[in-house]
Image (cartoon, rainbow over all chains, first blue to last red; front, top):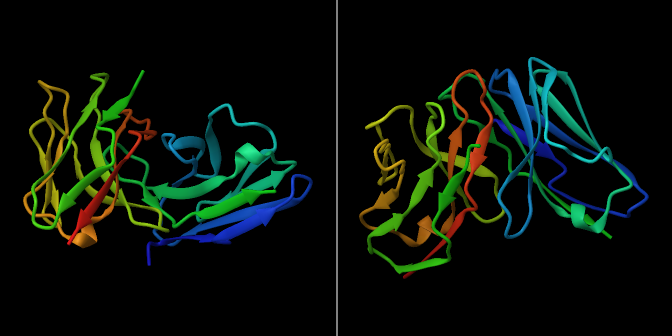
Length: 113
Length: 113
């Protein structure tokens, strides 16, 4: 039990499909993050939310659309994805201040056909 | 900008061997430093952290010391176990009120019985 729960764990979709990834944290944190982990590449930060406000968008293509309805929930809406978007998508949360670590979920393994 | 460089893997050791994974960071700001571990099929877990120079983080037999003079945060363990097989990530935050993390590329460790 990590305190950060991601669903689904695995997702296979076609390039024309629309799907959403969900993340929920039970730690009372105020900041939430989406990361992309591809093989043989450093972890890439995609989005940061602090108190439900987006504070970082790391030049992510518009086919990825985040939503943060409250401090405990974070979504990543997907549409018209490309094969190179196949990766492990990790959600994390933190208390936000310097020195406070980020806590990660187990990720959603996404495969684009 | 901020960056983290860690030794490329993979690293293969026998059980009870001594482990060192090197990590250096760019000397911008006053970062906190972290080691995360990722076991197969899981997200990243915080292993240890240090928030200022000369601090030593430790957990589960692993240690790392924040060395400002050499901008390093090397991970060490005196006697590894098969269960330590995982990918290890060094990370720094940006310091100040910005809690964005920058990760190294990760080092795969395999421990053989």
